[in-house]
Length: 347
Image (cartoon, rainbow, N blue to C red; front, side, top):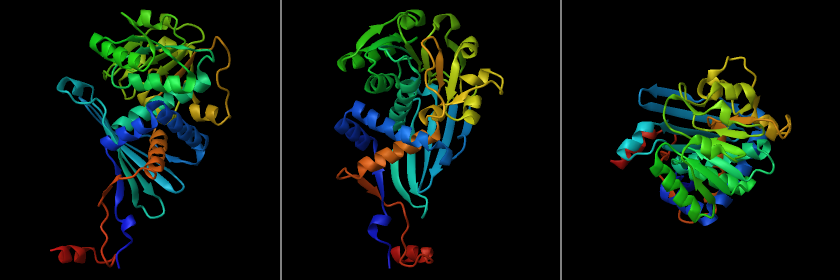
């Protein structure tokens, strides 16, 4: 006897379905709700099975697998990072992910994660800033105005009320694109001619550049007392954005130290340089911002638990969505021991 039909098909969230989901909720509501899932999972961080991502590097980019597991659910994401892709009209980052039932090993959701990764990266940035940024912050500098920039702006407005943005990118076309998109969404946007101009008056600085190289996007002399830095562009070995002296002045918070020490800004520092884990702040085991003059740095490289949270959130939303596509991914022979017989009967 075959297993029940519901067990033999897997809900599939395509790019089109993901866009419908985001638009149905509204991007800021989606980001706010996703942020709540991320905070919930960070509070139970210690009970996850976790590991640094498995990466395959090449001269052109990186392909990675990111797994995480907790009690009844397992998740993984496949993601690439290829900065040169934009020259041929392709995305720098693409991704898909899977959520599975630990008890049976059966997948229960397959989803695109190019859009979802952008949303979860922005939501995680805003969650960190909620605890670390100056409480009266209203202005953010966005250095790097590519695919991630608008998501970051929306998340920071949704969670922190940031509504004034100062933009800079080495490609003026990227800044024009970003400024046009964000102005339509009600932000007060200033396009700047350089990094120094962009950070003027900003309490928060987000760096989100794509080139796979060690670069100094933000220099030490531009970082004033009380600033919060959200560094999300440095995310693999040999790729950084901040001058080393900034790291020596800042209180540094990371997701998972074994991964960040290889991939993050702190790859510039000795392996014993002290850093703090963000989950401890969210869980109340460590303080958030400790004073008005403190310089805080979220050295974010992206971690699998954030993808776990994102897939868990999407799973819960898809349960309420009619017409979601189902994929025939799981073989279901009449006798579970007779897999080959299923092929013979199909012939």
